[in-house]
Length: 190
View 1 (spheres, rainbow, N blue to C red):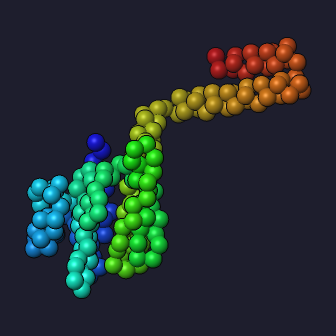
View 2 (view 1 turned 180 degrees about the vertical axis):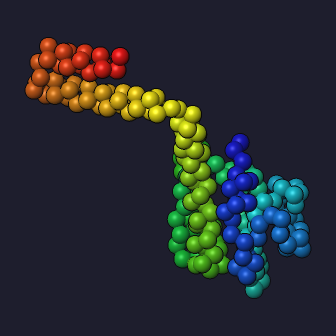
View 3 (view 1 turned 60 degrees about the horizontal axis):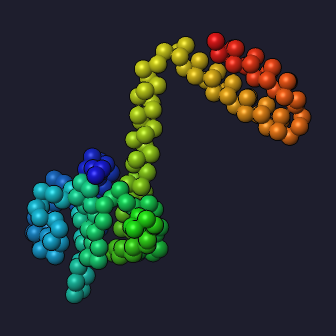
């Protein structure tokens, strides 16, 4: 299962007045009272980030571990979150469960808290894509200029061949013309 610890430690807001806490500055008294309600989180050391909203008769908490998010109604893996939408002081999370995206409503104390939490979930949703982009950049960094130019030429030749094939399908090029142009383009790749 994918770990989001680094992302949460870097990007989770730290604002005690709004109820946002991040490791290592987690309030032990609030966290201890909260962990009693969340049986799946066994140790305070597992908690990376924490949101706490005090209400008149009850409180509302959201816990983040390396891999999961917990609130009073549900818990699910962070990697299963497919989208997030803010509606006032609420967030509607699209969570991948049983093969489809199901909505999960999460109550937050204020619109500002909802906006901050929405940013966190947006980062979580886009994290796998960002990782893939970083890997591609790392791979490309190891290439020399001639290799990059050859790859760009290859891509251009393949796009041109696709366009020629479309022209052939539309009847604007004969099979002989298409084959001759295609061979000429492929010869350029050497």
